[in-house]
Image (tube, rainbow, N blue to C red):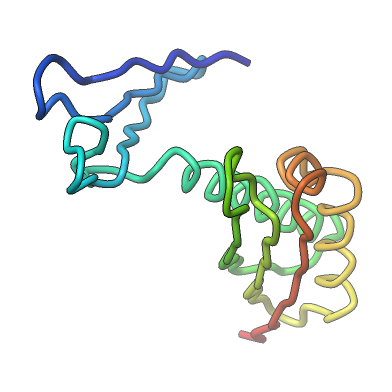
Length: 149
């Protein structure tokens, strides 16, 4: 896997802190920093997600992918899956994630609660590379709700 990240800035106070990531699979992701009123040259323009937000989003995508795949492989009629991630970060540099809570909303037809609980646990204990990696610095907790359709 590879990715090239390039700064979109230039010169002067309005150079910004925007970046474009070009992934090995041929996709583009834009990132930007938060504006800094005290030192505009050090801040972004709030035009895209922050880099750490993309880490959190990628983690959510990784675990949701696992949950859906595990349920499908178990021949369950899963119809939807979303995960809301909330996090806390360290107060000092490096500002790593220290707590992450993932709340899943999974919908399906005749979907057993035990199957959803198992799929989430399997993702977090065995399959989700991002969750397992972030678990080295963050306390990761999960909850879920099941919606029968």
